[in-house]
Image 1 (cartoon, rainbow, N blue to C red):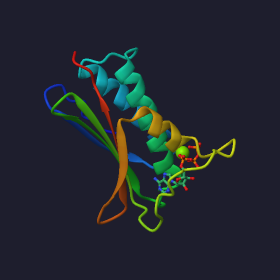
Image 2: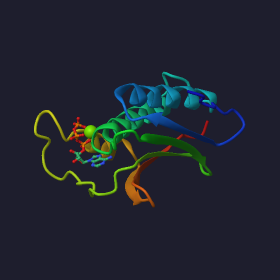
Image 3: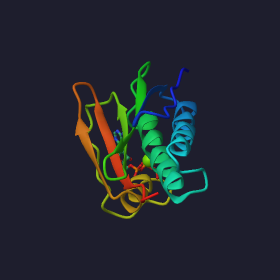
Length: 141
Ligand SMILES: Nc1ncnc2c1ncn2[C@@H]1O[C@H](COP(=O)(O)OP(=O)(O)OP(=O)(O)O)[C@@H](O)[C@H]1O
Ligand SMILES: [Mg+2]
């Protein structure tokens, strides 16, 4: 893997294998990039970003997986101290079922957590597959 952790730019884009390992890497890349952007590992912004990426990446490699295809992580630092997280997967034939009920004990917590942690989140269709995105404020530091 040839991840480019950027210091000067406001963006990280990385394709990752649709495996548990790929999902773990997504989380670690996020922690590293947030640190580079001035939000160290133990900061709230870094922690929140890691949790969001972990849930979205876990979903991408399970529900959004197409055999042999990667998923993609994008982190964008937007004007106004906003972090936008984008996790894209190749599966476009299933609409994301928005969880409105109670989690069943073992499943269905991921998107509830995303709803609680993110300022806003959503799903955008792509030519191939979809992007699940979430945004958080980075605070004025
Ligand atoms: N990337 C995705 N592609 C397709 N369907 C998805 C995707 N992410 C979530 N879903 C659908 O939304 C449902 C709810 O997702 P959520 O993350 O809340 O629960 P879960 O993944 O089933 O369980 P948990 O996250 O608690 O382990 C999933 O069961 C799945 O049907
Ligand atoms: Mg999930």
